[in-house]
Structure formats: C-alpha cells, structure tokens
Amino acid sequence: MDNPQPEPYDLLGVGIGPFNLSLAALADQVSGLDALFCEARAEFRWHPGMLVDGARMQVPFLADLVSLVDPTNPWSFLNYLRDQGRLFPFYFAERFQLPRREYDHYCRWAAERLVNCRFGTAVTALHWSAEHELFRAETGGGTGAGEVWARNVVLGVGTSPVHPEPFATLRGHPAVWHSADYLERRRTLAGARDITVIGSGQSGAEVFLDLLRTRGGDGTRLRWLTRTRALAPMEYSKLGLEHFTPDYTRYFHTLPAEVRDHLVEAQWQLHKAASAETLAEIHDHLYERTVGRPIDADPVEIIPGTAVTEATAGPCGGLELSCRHTDSGADHLVRTDAVVLATGYRAVRPAALDPIAELIDWDEHGRYRVDLDHRVATRPQLTGGLYVQNAELHSHGVGTPDLGLGAHRAAVILNAVAGKTVHRLPTRTAWTSFAPPASSVAATVLPRPQEGNRAAAAAR
Image (cartoon, rainbow, N blue to C red):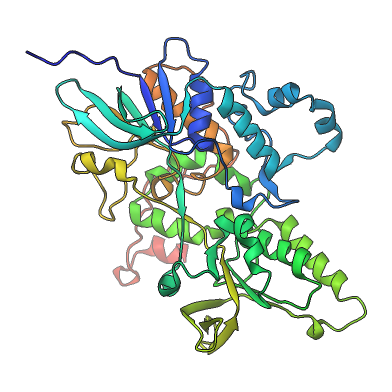
C-alpha cells in the first residue's frame, strides 16, 4: 500500500539570516502561502562579532527586509521605529545609514514576531521523495528530531569566514582568529604589544579603527596589512551604485561564465572596499594622536600591496609572517603578537544537501547553476524548486551579498514559488544601460589593406 501523502509546506527556508528573514517577512503577508523557516541557532544574530560601537551600515535604512518591494509591509524598518517609539529621534538624527546594532535589533524584532520563523531547529538533511514529488527535510534541535515536507526549498545558510591558506597551520591558534569573533575575543588582546589586522575591507577598517580608539594610547604597535595595492574607498557614487540594481543583475547573468568570474574579481571596489567615511575617521584619529610629535614616532603601520605568503609560530613566542611586496617582489618578515583576519566570507555548501548532491547540476567549479529566479538547476527527476540566497555571486554579480537587493530577490523567489505575480516588480531600475543597445548588430569586418578596398582606405 502506498505511503500516505504528507502535508507539505509550500516553501521551506533553511537558515534565517537577513535574506531568508526578508523572504519570511514578505511571505507572511501572502494569503494562502504556507511557509516555514528553520534556523539552528536559538535566536537571530547578525555578525555579532562586528557590532562595535560607532559602526554603521553601508546601505541606507530603506534596504530593510521589505521596503524596496513593499513599503506598506508591517515588517518595515519605519514600522519597527513606530513600535519602539523612536520615529521622532530617528527623524531628528537625519542619518540614512543605521548603526549596525540598530539593524541587528530591528531584524531580531521581526524574527521574534514572525510566526513562520522557527529557531533552535536545524535542517540536518534534505531528501527528495520521487514518490510524493516533495522535499523531505530531517530536523533536529531543541524541539527534538522530526521531519518537514515541502514543495520548494530556499537555502539561506549564509557564508563562512575565510581563513587564508598561509594561516592553515595556525588554525585554532589562540592569537590568530577571524574578525567574525572580534567582540567576543577582543579581550584576549590585552597582553599583546604588537597587533596585526589583515584585510582592507569594511571589517578590517572597523577593527583597525576600534583598536586605534581602545589601544592607541598604551604604546601597542598596530599594523594594518593588506594585499590590495591601495586603501581605496568603496564606490559610492550615485551612478556607480547602479551596479546594485536588478538591471545589472540581469545583464551580468547573460555574460559567459569566464567573463563573470573576471568581473567579480575586477569589481572589488564595488563590494569589498571600506567606506570613505570609515577611512576618513581612521585618518582623523591618526592625525589627532600625532599632534605635537612626528609621524614616525607613532607606533602605527599601514602596509598595502603586501601579501602574507606564510604564517608560523615564532621560535621565541609570538607569530612570524613572511610577506611579499606585490610591486617590488621584495620579501620581509613581520613579527607580531596577534593577528585579526578580516579576510571576508565565502558561500559554503551545507552538509544538509549531501543526500541530494547528485541531483544538483553543478557547474565545472562545483558551484550552483542558478537562473534569474534564483532557482538552482537540478536533474530532471528532481522536480521541486530549490532556490539559493547569497550563494550566487558567480552568476548574479556584486549585488548578491548586498542588503539593498535582498527584498527584491526575495520577491522574485516568492513570485516564482507562487507561480504568479505576488509582488509587482519594476521593469527598469537604473539609468545606466549595461548591455549594448538591442538594435546593435555585429561589427562589420573591414577588408584587409592589401585587398585594395578604396572605401576602407578612405575610412583610414
């Protein structure tokens, strides 16, 4: 006898970070859509190690969970302010960029109230049932083991800290850790007299600035070291920001894979650099602390264009970093007491996918093939919808991790899952035309000069 048909959800979200939380908030307002979002952690947490005092978002407050798709949605940041009795203070603050701590509190406010969010519940394995044409998710956590059935699944498991290969032998060393753990482990730096921060992005800049503020007056040598040739600010011109629009995403998706991979690396200043405001604060702090004394008396080093080729524990304690200057090729050794790796994050394949890994159509680099609806390509026998959020940088471009595109991507996925237009989305969002005009044709190849073509010669 056939097994009874399980009662499925229309959509199961695996992981609850800002992007799946955005999807949960938009789905909450869709009548007839049954969705569930599961998170292994006991509560919502957004980069808790980097909620340092004074740190601000790099996007305006409108890049909240819902507003750029549905500003009337009750889970908007403005409604959060209303609920918290903070509308007038926010109005008088006249700041578009929120403190990181407030953005985290806003997301927790929503996560604690959304009935479709379930914390303390890890999705440990994801199976495909050909019999029922449904996903079957094994779950575990505080509520015990169980299973959830769903027609569609969206992966929002986030990214993991990157530990560069030269530091592989120091993995777990008490004096080497990632900026993701900065606030939790900052106190362990109390005895260090020489501290090195590696990485020129926003996290690196914020860690270096915080160390200048908290350790700048006790004689500790602070060093900021990065492979990037210049500590250039993140692109923040109005037209430059149009790279973070759905228009650019659609254009980027049409490009050959090798072109996309090259662009992601070349566009580092769009998504990996530090804000001009943070860089200015660092310079202001350095300027003020050297009043009345020469710069070379200040125990601060800022060293761009330098790569760490090997990192080892020193023979007499501390750490030794073998470094190479990119332009000159010169090698030198840095001795330091502690290293904070502000070396970014990388999308990882969750272990829960292992049972269906062979049903996924991976690309030649082992990455998801993702269509414009953010649906992952799968083998024909897997007919359910498998979607990803913030794992498609290689296919959708620099806007992938940007919070400003979070609500739009969630709405695209929601429309695809519902099979209808739940949210009406704009057809054009940028002044810039990234692709050649639709009316353009392939360039005419001129005859070679030796062919004696007089028209070609006249054109020269």
